[in-house]
Length: 143
Figure 1 (cartoon, rainbow, N blue to C red):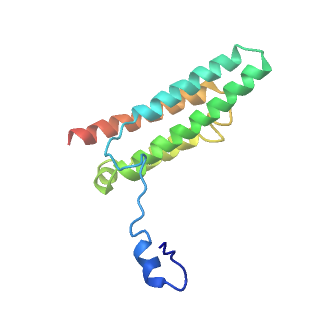
Figure 2 (cartoon, rainbow, N blue to C red):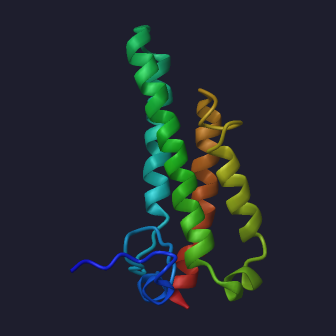
Figure 3 (cartoon, helix red, strand yellow):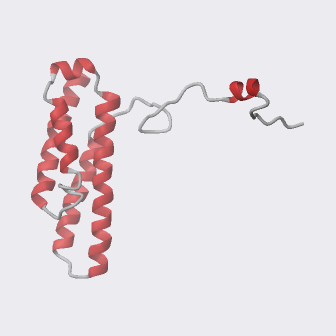
């Protein structure tokens, strides 16, 4: 016998309903965070910008630009995970520039930055911002 929850069986529907909604950068909140993930993607972006500049093949350029845009999204994702899941109110109190750093870095990885442009200077700026965030991150790990 198979019982299907529906409007005539609210008790069963209530028992089978999810009780907790969880969101993390992986399938199980593992507690493993590292700004190196964002940096690796940003380094890839910088290399892709150079490869596009050195190649006239339109198919290659299209593929490289698509990958660069995907890597830019990954940079934003990894930074947002640090910002929303790792950094806590005491970190923001001790490092009041942290909100601004993450905002500036994610914007550098966005449409007006590496995602939308082929500007190696923007990639360098992004790498510098990630390094600033990483410095704060590692200081918080020592505490």
